[in-house]
Length: 427
Figure (cartoon, rainbow, N blue to C red):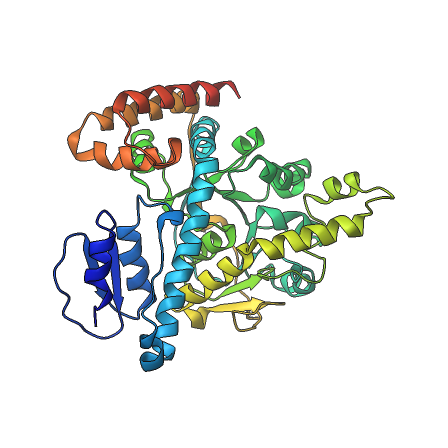
C-alpha cells in the first residue's frame, strides 16, 4: 500500500525508486518514483529495462515489504522471482559487454571485409533440427541421421564436430560468440571440405570468425542495434534481424522460426552437466584438455574441475530460466526436444518425405568487400552528425566501447572507431 515509498524517498534523495505492485494501487506522485502493477514477466522486464539502463547492478537493491508475502503468497513469490531473474541476467550481460564490447566492434568491421557471398531466403515448410553441444546430443545422433534428408539442420558451431563424426552435414552452421576461443570449433569444420562446402554460415558479424568464412555463403544476423543497421544499409548487405540472446541456441531457435513454419526439434540443449561431461564428443576443446593432462592432473580431474566451474557459474541456470520464460512467447506446440532436456516436450521429426532444395536460398555476390570496413566507419561518423541519429548511436557505442559509464563526445567516439578500423584491417 505504498508505506515504504515516502520513507525511502526521504532517506535516499538521489536514488531512483521502482515500485512493483501486484494489485492496482493509486501511487502518491513523487519525484524519481516509477511504478508498475503487473505479474506479466514481459511487462516487468520491459519496465525494469527502461529504468535501469544506466545503473550498474551493484547499485541496485531489492527492498521487500514482507507482509505482502503473507497476503499474496504465490503471486508475491512470482513477482520477486521475476525481478531477481532480471537483475541476475542483466548483470551477466553488462559484465560480458564491458569485457567484450571493443572486441565485438573490431570483429564486426573485420568480418564485413571478408564477405564475398550473402544469402537471401524465403520461408520454407520443412521441419528444423537445431543442435547444441550438450552431452545428450550423442543419444540424439541416430534420430538426426534418420531424419537429416527430411529436415533443415541448424548447428551451433560447437556441435559440428560431433555431427560430422556421425556422418551428418549441417545445412546451416550458426556462430555468434565473440571470444577467440570460438575459433576452435570452426577451424576443424573447414579442414573437412566435404562439410565446409555443403553448409552455409549464419553469423552475427560481431562473432569471432576465421578468414576462411569468406569462402562460405553467409546469412547475416543483425542484432537490430541502430549502428549495425546504419552500416548494413550503407553497404547494401541483406540481413535477418535477431536480437542478441547470450546463447547461440536461443538465436538458432529464433532463426528457425524465421526460416520455417514447421516444427522445430532441439538436440543437445541440456542446460545441465551430465556428471563430469559438459559437452558431446568429439568437441573442439578436447585437444586442449588432453594436452594439459598429466599424471598429476589426469584428464578426468580436468573434466571434473571444468564441470564444477560451469555448474557453479550459474550460466546454465540463467539460460534455462530464460528459455522457460520465452517458451510461451514462441510457439510451444512447435518446439520439441530430441534426447535429454528438462524444459521442452520430447518428440521426433515426422517421417513423411519432405524434399530439401536450394530454392529456399539465393546467393548474392559482393566483389568490393575490401572497402567495406572504411565505408562502414564513415557511415557511422556521418550518422553521428545528424541530430535524429546521433543520440541512439552514442548510447549504443558508449556501452560497447566505454562500458557506458560516462557520456562520451563525438570526437572520442570518432577516435576509437578509427583505431578499431585500423586494427580490423591489419588482423
